[in-house]
Length: 326
Ligand SMILES: Nc1ncnc2c1ncn2[C@@H]1O[C@H](COP(=O)(O)OP(=O)(O)OP(=O)(O)O)[C@@H](O)[C@H]1O
Figure 1: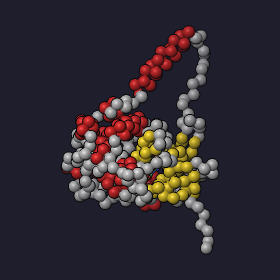
Figure 2 (figure 1 turned 30 degrees about the vertical axis):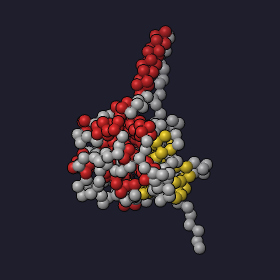
Figure 3 (figure 1 turned 180 degrees about the vertical axis):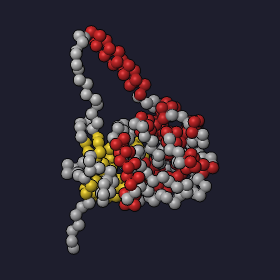
Figure 4 (figure 1 turned 90 degrees about the horizontal axis):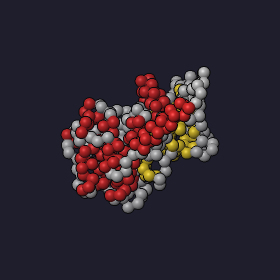
């Protein structure tokens, strides 16, 4: 038997699959130091689409700016040129998906705890973490576009959101365009305006947050999918959700995007306010201190202030790589 060389993408050697979606296959991969990443390799038919590749390259460049406690960070990427298939390597998050935890079995089939809805404290923490993740993603100028239970990983240090910001196949308004088990009900988490008008906005992400939280609170998807997606035409089934969460769930799942709360409001509603306001206070204090110290200093004729180094750029051959320290 002829031994086949392991598949490599940049410095990453691809291992077993972690999941498969409409856009690509996600595999566990390692570099020579043993560092693990979740490597998403774009499906071949999309790799041939020049418009998709251009969008992918733009999104990867923006993705580098996303750093937060509840999101997975970008590690490496190649937007692909010629025969090279685009891929992206994200920080590997160890833990079951929310989908697996609630269903009580892993997306690969193995058991994951007893399953069932989460308790109220866990739900509040989950809502706070999802709101934090969306605030981080939106703060970088991106939208998630596909938040669903299989994109939430329950790591030991808290929930982490994955699979955001990268160009994705726009889901059709029926359930024929999705492949994986986690993705089979993806349309049940997409906002009505996303399905009806193709509008993916921050408010649409908040709708998905509400639907994911409802799944965790009730143990079932709040909307059925089918040729007439119920997120567009029907009301959510919230039977079994704790009463104290109903106002939040209902607000997030409003059909009118303008009526939905922001992630910051969601976090406040569940008693896990986001740290931004503290950061703002610190920033103001820092500016005031800096002004005071400048006023005391003698003037310097020509001080060079190099701009913040852009640490992630697209190479001439289309490959992305670190060009300057973060
Ligand atoms: N950073 C990560 N760490 C660990 N596992 C991950 C990571 N990213 C993705 N996965 C695993 O891979 C699975 C599939 O990922 P992906 O998000 O690409 O699927 P999808 O959302 O169905 O795809 P698509 O966005 O292409 O429609 C996830 O459900 C998760 O189990």
